[in-house]
Length: 358
Image (cartoon, rainbow, N blue to C red; front, top):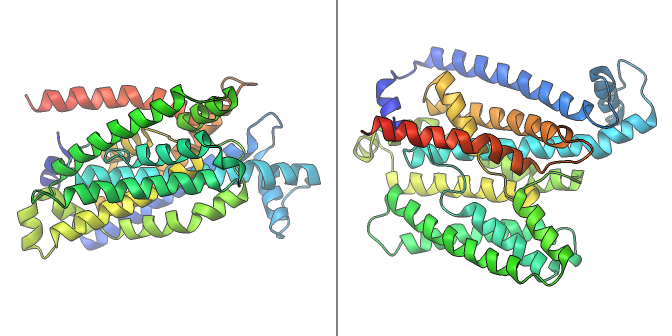
């Protein structure tokens, strides 16, 4: 069943009912995210209790705490674990809401943030920086190169699409697939011809997606762009609902279909680029989370978009906890874990969609 058919089957939500659903949904997901953050900070080789975590955070920001904590505990929480958890939450939120947006724009529950090549562009930018040794210049070279790669790829997709009269979602999808395939080949060339083992390990680790050694600098780098773009996307919930029913219905409702679609894709692409720039390539979050939330809450994007952001944040924080503790003392890159979880879900969706279309 397509996303658009789900919208047609669902009745529009009234104003008061919408506020109640949105408030209750976000309240539950915020509580889940808060619990995930505390668990993410508490669990590790040096275990802490929830009370110690909250006290260390309170002490770190000058508010005091409910129990005594040592300076060492405060350092572990504030300088090592909390920045990593916050980066995970920001990346998960970005991928979650970007995925929900892509699925609505393309009217397909199989769409996800990398669908028009943005993740491949970010990966190419980062791998290029590693391959040519630019990362030795500054620690900011890698995230900046990844973000620029995502932006350049997004501009390339829209530039190619502008040469055609048909700028439908299917056209953008085909262009994105072609560009992704080309960039994948470029990355393969660099992996194959890497000159040192250290260079190769850096490329492979980044392509696997991970959150190790994230600091407050990484939080500051992506906090504003991710929050701003996510809020902007959430404001388009009604327009997305109308677009899902069909372009003609959207036009009759006063929606500028072309500009709205491009604007939504630009925002989703910028979110994906910002997220990937600090985490590497993490797949399937933008596929699994919106689909799971849609099954529970329905297809109304006015609720689905903010819920996908909060759900994506909680999901990636918890996935990172599992990734770094399940095989202790070894830490598994979180991108591998999300692929292990997401690939079966993707296969299920493909089979379900094939069954519905028969």
